Image 1 (cartoon, rainbow, N blue to C red):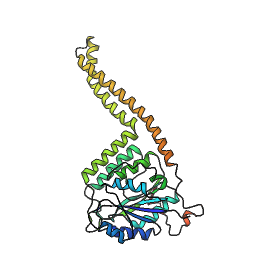
Image 2: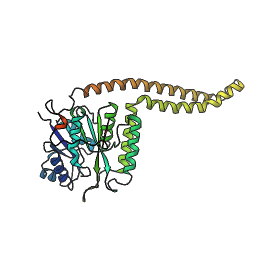
Image 3: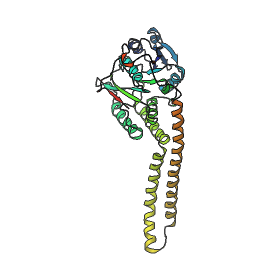
Image 4: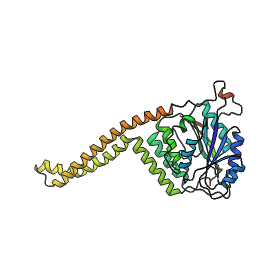
Length: 330
């Protein structure tokens, strides 16, 4: 039995591009079911998507994260591809990405963006992406080069066990950290990234959404790496305590008295708080370990992605294999 493949295209006011995105996906994956999730568009996005032959569904709550949350809950498929509806990604690589998911098998294949024109990224976005991706690599693992890519393929066991708590553009960060924290098998393929077509306008707000992503990274670090997070805070408190207490201790050694008793009490109190913060971090680390075990078991309730026992992945008609220079696997 052939696997069910679904494509999900989140859209908000993308009438200029959505028709081409759907047609390109259909050419690359003719057997796939293509869903366009309209996110309260005020233009003719829905009309253009229907003309192109997509199934249109609606998510009235604004934000890409809300669309992903809804789609992951509603869609049933063995492999689910998401791609932005702005025609900036090369949809012709969809077949290659889906085939790679099954050949691995992988739970997560990322289309890492390769800028083919100098204006593909808005001012500051490329630098911001590198900085945020670097922060995630430092905290959670090195198996990602483009954390904010909106072009991905997921196995059923990934998207049906993914909590999808984000509301807006920070959803890609949440996806990446989820895969890294559970050490899910992941691969990357380089894909072309270009300008939006004429008449299409980016919905990403550089500073506001960048700040939301940074806050999410810090929040995930606090939840996913509590021992590290609390150790840093405890260390800062300990430094403050030592800075306050060292002169008092030196005076006590010289004179045998504590003339600055309030400062001594303050230093001792801060050090006590530092120790408590450190202990809380290690307690939360134990709870986090149990939570990861539960997430892992939820993930394993679903079978690994497969085309079926009677098919050899490399012999699939229309399948292609990425070159070693393009593929990065974890």
